[in-house]
Image (cartoon, rainbow, N blue to C red; front, top):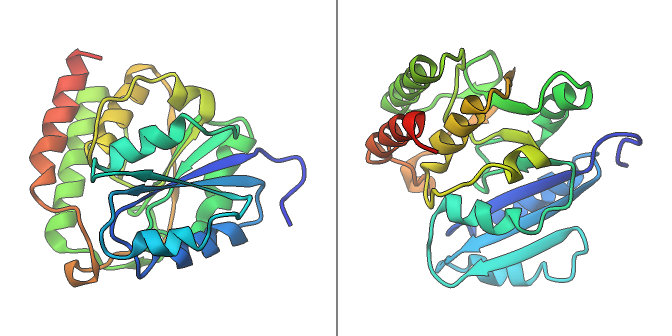
Length: 233
């Protein structure tokens, strides 16, 4: 049962070609004992994901939207943000790398009035299945660049688990279409002087044969995004 007296949560799940995991991640999110609404945005899937989502139509807790073509994670998040009504927004990937049981810890700083934005860090002591070495190096380098440019002390800028008071994220103009959503939202949150609190989370990294999509090619774009938004908005 949802915890009484706590904030209502809008969970945004961008989905692209995740037929093996999408039903399970929705099931896991539904089991989290918080009052919530779930927004699933299918970003032009071609692997049967849409058929699975069609079977979930009619669930009052799950709202499903479809892009006619693949536009990217950032575009999917922007589609969902037009419809959220909760007091807090959580971004949730559909690939089972991130565990919805961490929601309680992620929400606590906001519920206690200690933060408006919370990031779940993979590098602060949670249970982790090892990620690729060069992915870890890339994550840490991009986080270091973030800290230098924006005078912050983050440990994991690229984390999926980003949690916002709804008025914060809705008040930020978002332009990114793909994975550069992560550096863009981080840059704009920090430029607006919102403190980001990090909490440890679990992480179960998957391999490319399991459907992992982000690659080294996204790193230069992320770097450029961080640099660009340091000087423009």
